[in-house]
Length: 252
Length: 348
Ligand SMILES: Nc1ncnc2c1ncn2[C@@H]1O[C@H](COP(=O)(O)OP(=O)(O)OP(=O)(O)O)[C@@H](O)[C@H]1O
Ligand SMILES: [Mg+2]
Image (cartoon, rainbow over all chains, first blue to last red; front, side):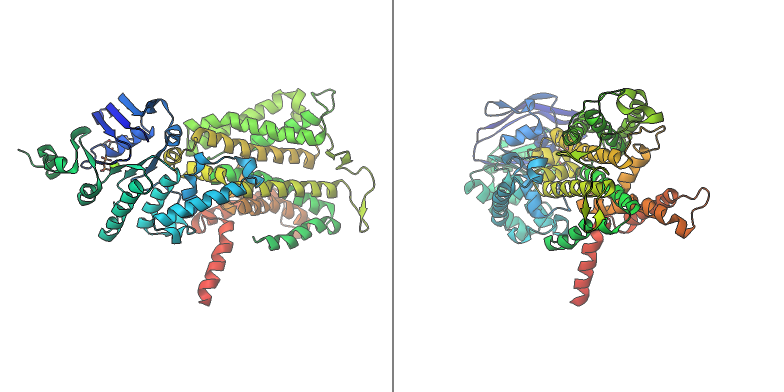
């Protein structure tokens, strides 16, 4: 992967400034955390990177590519995978079917090719890869179950599996630990570490669980009210007075 | 349904013309027209989540295209093409018409899209009346060319006898429709299980997430409008062959009108949104009921004055929709699996 660089990005919704002149860089292969209180603008920032929101100012580049000129599906095809804050899966479809959606850009064929069964071989190969990814995330036993019938923890992992199925070089994870218990969170932390080291995928992680973030991230960017208030290693950021203030709400 | 279960169904459908009288065959053919159209709409509305009340319009596009492409050069515009090529051409033209409408779905959603699509029905009504050189106009209509397959006519022409039963126009059309329905069904079943089907469902469930997975949402919508309209166009071709005339409607209520669009929606809701098999069952209910009631009407003696089979059927399928929405949102297609599940539960 090449660097993801956000420069002076601002985003407004009417009078509300969701992102205010933010800049940060996600280095290749890093595990970069984006943290901040509720409403700080973390998900909005993801949506800007994915091309779902268009910023009012600033630039977003992946290497030499200007992401702001691209439609969301083109951004995805550059190798940016995304898991959503509240999962965004099809509840009536099976886990496998959901994960296979991630293979969309890696496969070919429309109505006639599918209808005439010309893509059976391709379907089989990619289903095998999708199962492999589900096994890797520990949800291999549920692949053929309809998603709506499964616990939230499994759905969260299915959402990550789908993002991984796009074979990204950068993975955006929006609060993957939300709604998980302590054990599940610990497993998830290990898994995110593996995604980075074993699969060699850079991760940009939004998370409220500080223990998780400080334990695995090598770079942390802190947002508050749409502004970057700190950017550095976990150790630097943890002791930063602005960060402490933002999180504890202490007024001095 | 399992593959083996298809064998007896297929045999029965193939043998029916040897046993049924022509009026019953006509009724069956009409249900097959409904089934082809309903499969198209269940892909659009059920699989891809795009509400459309324009199905009647695309039927008219297919019907007119076939008649013009295959029609003789004469009073009306006719290209005199081979009927099979004309049928394929009519389906292609309908697909293009659907694709041309697709951009509207990029701007409006849900019920608003339904209303926007309704305008096409009125466009069809106007064009049907105004473009007399194509449609023949509302007063006389226009005769379609007899369908021929490599020279073999689907009419009463020529003697063909199987097991002592003469295979005449009605029987031949039965087999033609059966083949078209089988092909339409098989293609749809295959497609929904593959890449394009997943893209359609993703667009239905969450456009932003679909795009983030690399799905070109605009193109995916265009594809489903094209496919759905192609099915409607084929149903339109079948409609002119069934009536043996192309006759544009005089009001928005007619063969290609609002009522037809709503009937197709009823089929896919009753059958279970998105279910290809369900769409066929829905067509049997919605298009079959008025036909069967009409055939029985003299025996039943129910229908006097303003109480017509069509009216009674409208009430029946109206009630069926309410029941489905209240008790089984998965439609009739979900009833089978549910019963199976229940039996398994009771056993254990
Ligand atoms: N589509 C939108 N339209 C209007 N306002 C929006 C929109 N999306 C986000 N916002 C606003 O932008 C601000 C930042 O929201 P965002 O969802 O990015 O925060 P967040 O940091 O992800 O919060 P959380 O931790 O609660 O997920 C909030 O005030 C939110 O209400
Ligand atoms: Mg958020």
